[in-house]
Length: 66
Image 1 (tube, rainbow, N blue to C red):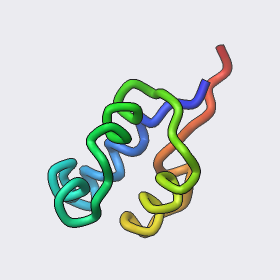
Image 2: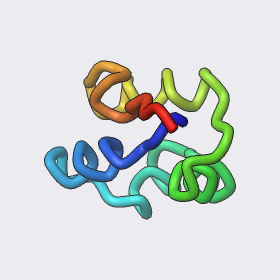
Image 3: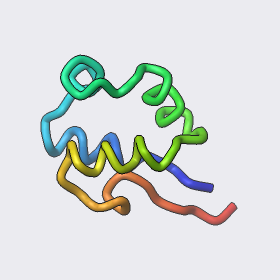
Image 4: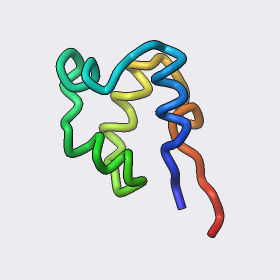
């Protein structure tokens, strides 16, 4: 299972709020909801988040074996 717990930690470190992701970076509320629920997210969104946060994929996502 892929979890996005690291995303919330990275956002906090970078001092970027979910509101800012929506308003300034045009990340949809639907995508953020899927990220919160560890749901399916497309690679475009992951790419955009890495650009916004200037980080690597492993800074926002982690694979955990069931």
